[in-house]
Image (tube, rainbow, N blue to C red; front, side, top):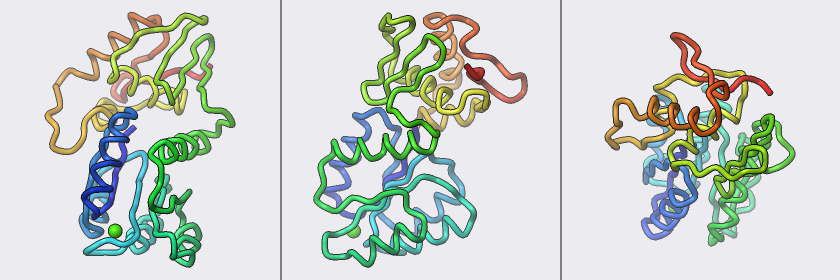
Length: 219
Ligand code: CA
């Protein structure tokens, strides 16, 4: 999943950046509210972790603009302990959840998984699709109870497709999920990982939708 982190505190930001990268997200990190607002107008991300006290433009204004633009992007806000009014305002403006600084990285990850799960309309962590089970926490795949060893980027593609069976994702969208801004995109990476996934999970598991992209059919 592609995640935008907006946090101006270098120390906290770098800890969160590495924690989330380690957890399997493709993370882009901005330190300025104005830059974040501009990026959100142009780039498609799957999750936003937004600090409220930011230079350029405060987090609540970024969030307000995002919702005014009609975006339903899942947002978790980061706030200070003494700002209950800000947290209430944030939730009312359209944040999905919040965390009070300082927080535990494990809890941030769990809350992000919960947001993604609720957005996909699932009550449980694991994604079941026919005989395939995907665990978004462990990034593990089992088919018929057998564990499949997959490349981290193949996993990221599989997870994205499994979030919405029946909805095709374009190659460009999948590239965005695999690579952060400024990262060199290998031109045939998506095709290579799709090929790898089909080889491991069965050809019919992932369909090519001509002129559109790739899709996992509804179970
Ligand atoms: Ca701050």
